[in-house]
Length: 367
Image (cartoon, rainbow, N blue to C red; front, side, top):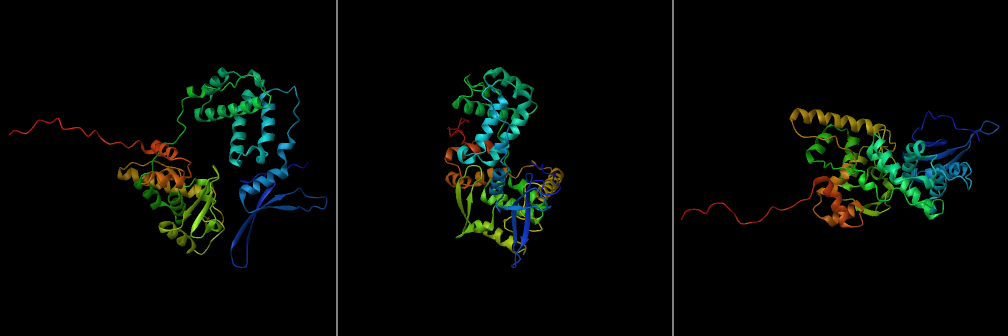
């Protein structure tokens, strides 16, 4: 099969996947994705439509590439960890069977790049708990090491359930000894947010407002579309958990939408760059968000006020923390229980407690 040449454009997309943008008679922008086939004997190149939703487009792209089916054949005698990983990925890429998201698949491919040089040729039944601890101790990034070792545990459980491994899971019971701070503990104060907002351009202000007002994850915020706004609410299916929400478009959220529309250039997504293209987590957003945070830090230092160079995802925790009702916060974040929300907030701002209401021990006044 003819190999795809290195990309000069659309470097954020997989090989042979391209983006096309069109403007209809009404002046509205449409962005779609295509699979770019190799040129035929006449030098012509066929494009197969993949749709206008990036996640669905990547699923169709993966089906057309058939990468999981092009893996080297696995023999019965091939019992090394690499062989188990290849078997696992064949299963995992059939998402109707595995139920895994594209984000999860991408993360696990990234973990394997770090794990393969160390464990790839080791027999799957030869893995030992001591191997895991030595890997954790040697890895410079402890957070990454723990995530990678947890993936080994997933791999081993999968293999044991299917008869590819008979030894006990070498990760069982040892991750508690791997002390790392995995969660974030940043709470964005009103003053910190106001400083960044002050130095941000209108598009970055839109991102900050939409993130805070809806309390959604950055990936879900950036892909929100005008077509999701129906019956006075914006309908959301969270990418990570598939939780379904309907957030009322009222108050400041309604004002935000009107402000965006008033600029005149409206794309398919609610958040768009100056050309009307969907805003991505890199490029325009990254550079302008960085400039706003840098300028805010300089001003904060000059004023002598605390400032943390927070990330966009920290606004989700701020939104939940700022709500008075735990029930409201749970529903907005898409958590299944209030305890999940309570622990999520507690990690950022700490437990709120009352002082001891004891009688005073100060001397009694003279009569």
